[in-house]
Length: 136
Ligand SMILES: [Fe+2]
Image (spheres, rainbow, N blue to C red):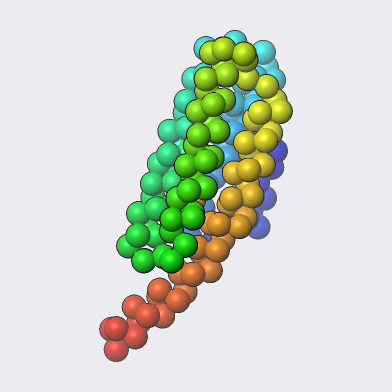
């Protein structure tokens, strides 16, 4: 479960948020691997969810400010990823959280990052160019 630096979206604030999300994934995985009980894994997962919600909110606010045309699709993916994390949270209290659940959620989040987040990052130079035109 690695997140190499080459996955940067070249927006330092978003890279920092993504880093925190992926670090929380590792923490959940480590908590489970170290034999953490439901209370430990639930607490670790709750922190991951909080981080994910904050990161998604920041991205969505920026997309709205920039009038990003793919904003609704991007928000929908955030909602689906969050829904999955909440299902995992529920599993910690019922059937139990598994490494497979964590791995699947991590892979889905990484896929989102490498596709949707990068697509947004590629859109930003257009916004900057338009802003520069308005200043001239
Ligand atoms: Fe995103």
